[in-house]
Image (cartoon, rainbow, N blue to C red; front, side, top):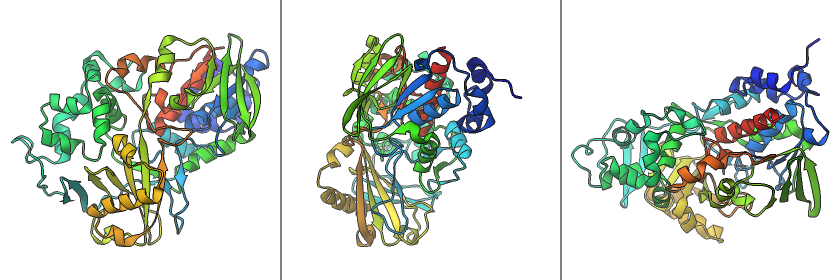
Length: 493
């Protein structure tokens, strides 16, 4: 007979590391059976309320249920997943596209472990072709592998013979090879990097000696607004998040297969179409006010995991002791304007042109992605990916007009696109009621002021979501934060 173990022993043995995921996520196996009944205290203290069935909330719920807690997940929408959202309509031939989280870098060990735990195979995000398209200063440039590009910008003598990758090596990578290893901790940044919190990315590149022309190339495909809005330190951390990656992957069949599998394992513990309108907490427990299919009700528990974005949490009545730092973080944290427009084409014409379906541009559509990837069939799917001011400027209620505008701009990079166009679709995270933006970013000064408070618990209220992690904007961050909040609760006993 196996001996039951206490929660601290559970934490020690699992380490809450990636290697333990497969075991901890299995709710019906012997490990979960050993944990069941190991909680102590009254019935209410064993109940945990999780607000939001995104990747972070689902992770926290699975870990907590494995640890013996009774978990209720409250989800405002009729679906789980949060910003992991795969679109299958209105596309033909089984095509699908990622409206939200798209890529998995090969150094995101936690994400890869979850994919393995749920037996979800991966496919490459991008199959590089012999050439890539750039569009800059109203010129279409075909960059062939191994050949120099005559960039239509003014470069200094030290830059003139460098590729964009070469410019990164010259101006960015030396900073990333310094005192940066602790980026995944909550006491980041180190003193050597704090100076970069007071400048934008554009100012950082200029401080490194990059010419105006080199800065244009290094920021090509990024919204000029985000280049001038976000702290350079925020950009540095984002680069470190996926630094050294060899490949980028996706889950075969759609990234939502992961969140669907997690939600299915939780079963009826997830309550859909149940938005939270109020959170009350005391030293002894929490009470949540909800709209259960339009009817007001309350749910009580011992702890609460809040995994919804701060942009949405601001509209929830919060009545519990909360530090000034946390209140300020909730009120001030910025979420990136973001929109994707998908273009279905009757053929994958770019393959005949020996390109890969990707492009970077200084136009408002910013980047084009081959969203169809390795999916089968003759039809193709191109995504225009916009953030910051570009997403705000392009976003409009008339989606048909927006799609026409995107097709017109994309046709400048891929002249066969207009004639191959069949249909389009739009997903705007900025106007989505339950997101109100994409990943969180730090403006100059925010890392020093806000970052120390974003992830901290306030009594029995714990905060998850990629915005509370060292990997904002990545699935890795959501998973990491869910595990952290589960551990906080387990260790609070």
